[in-house]
Length: 256
Image (tube, rainbow, N blue to C red; front, top):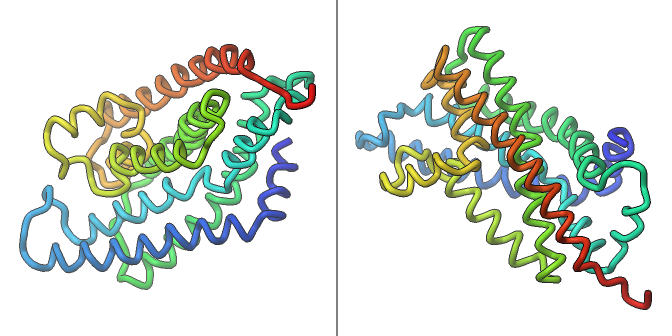
């Protein structure tokens, strides 16, 4: 199923490339703006330009994951009632969709890391942590895949009640961008909003891997963040199973 999903991404490569380009141009704009701001001499959370550049590249990678429009395809199947065909398959719906996500994520990781590495080289490089910290960062990035899948999956299940996914997708994208730290570092948010973000799973999507990469969280603190990511994956996985049970009761197959 993972291999099938990888081929699906290649089949719909136009959507994948367009989505990647959108995030890429957003990254270029953010790099330009932050360089001007930091070179002005003002303090922004204690970040230097090389650190902010590294932060933005990490955010680029995490924002590009789970972005091959699988959620829109799933939403369309829910609206059309075709999801009923998935109910008779031996693999649970959630597990099947996650396997597809892993297939897409493998390709997305390869492409986004190549792009991020190229930008880092062209712009003068970024700080590189030592090997133990890099390994912790790799684990954190790996945890982003199931975590982001579950955030997307749960929001897509709302189509069973709303029958309209576009508004849900926009709301989710905006919420994740702000509270994950992919738009701006959480330290720059008002204290009350920063505290709120840290109590939600979204911070584990970008702020956590960025903090580990930059060495802002090391040793026991970094391990604690990884455990938090794992905890959110577990909680949201169970939540996904529970919401699915209620969602299928709303299923209406037209003409059936």
